[in-house]
Image (cartoon, rainbow, N blue to C red; front, side, top):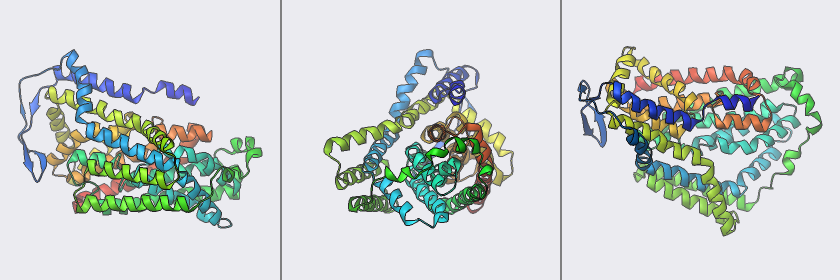
Length: 464
């Protein structure tokens, strides 16, 4: 049933290519127009009230296809950043440090199983917030389910501990290079700035998720028939043993040193961004050093290290190349001089809302867009070129526009069927999509409410 549903949903690249075609066709019908732009404090800023129509400049058929390599070229810095950082994390995963760390934590928490859910969700949230962990956490779902079942919970609980933990950090995105990093670079704001505000919202997002999962788990442990997947649990009853721990490596000194390298590397990156004005090139180089240092300390042979590096790049290829495809949309609209017309129309529409609610309109535009373009980096490349000048026209800080993208992109990934990570979790867990929706929809609504309130506050206090 999931395969049939998946086949009815257009591929993300197909959706983006359709948008490229629509943008090309629109260049023949939408009035061409331009805003004046000036340089202010290192940012290219749209001049309010400067919009004017100009002669039409429709995009030709061959020009439409030229826009794809042009988009790849314009997005090359971000594309290679995603590829190389993904490769570095591939090496880290190959060392087995993450699995060994989980094994050690599980053993430490024996007889204190109530702590297992918040601790696991916290650990995975940190990974989501700093490395953008999403699809990468799919491999841990079977382990989470085995552990959850062993202490009286169900497959939903085990899946939620991993997926919603990582999702909480991904939404918080304090140092997520694939969403916040990409969006801020496109918005021309300081990389990973506004981290304090993001951290505050992350605490609320994670706390609600932990409370939600723990309440469900307690209900299931008290009465197993309350499980949303009770019938499936009965079928798998014979397999409910702690075989998850048997496949996990023991935590050793090498793993401890790898964790130390990762922590030190992330600390240096944070210092470099805020004190040395590091940008994507410097961060990419730093992540490569972290990855190879982790591989050497982790005992990987040279061939294994580079195989893991390539495998890590393969995992992010979908999101990396989609940046170039999405940039092609911008290239078409720029060549046809219709992007400013679109910005002017959105400014008029959203600008009719009260000042503090303008950002809510931007937020829900991102929520809707996320259904069609669930790749965070791809969505950033598609929407930020429109949202940044729109924010300038509406008098909203660019940082707030990035926040609207960040929350609009991250929250619904835990419920939309176009999310590759979500469908991967459910496929591995054997949980039907509709059962998961029944479990998670109230949490998603809660997250949307938190984000809405946070964005209003961000506008009021002027987060920069």
